Image (cartoon, rainbow, N blue to C red; front, top):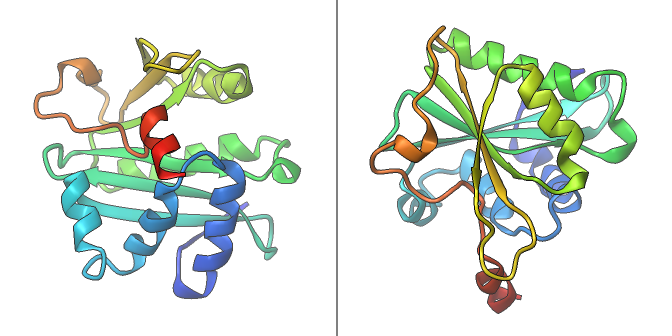
Length: 191
């Protein structure tokens, strides 16, 4: 596996990969473009209280984009990053590739001096393998009740990158929305 910073040449392909991985979400389309052109997407940054959006594309050898890892940095939590859009296409999974990608993100964020890496997912069966990976890497989970019209719970995972246990997300002051989290009624209204 190798990882490349998102660039304009791979933007459309990466948006297509994100749409395949997260067909019920729409935010990644804007987030990926915002990673390349923050000034043009100042409204996106402002409405989400973001300081940064970065994305890397995943490739097997020199092959096409087969996955992505996107990080959101929030203004109110400058030492933290959120792993927002993270995944590999189904035919690229296996052989420990997801673990390699997560390990690369963790290592890169540690080298930058970040204190905490967070992500959210759900307790749905389709995410069970990913959830086990996060636990094996030392992430601490927090469970949140289902939103209206949902049958699943939201899980927020936090990992201390500096040798300390992170503050639980529920105890973070001035925390914003979960990156990419859409309420079902909002998503239905947008459709």
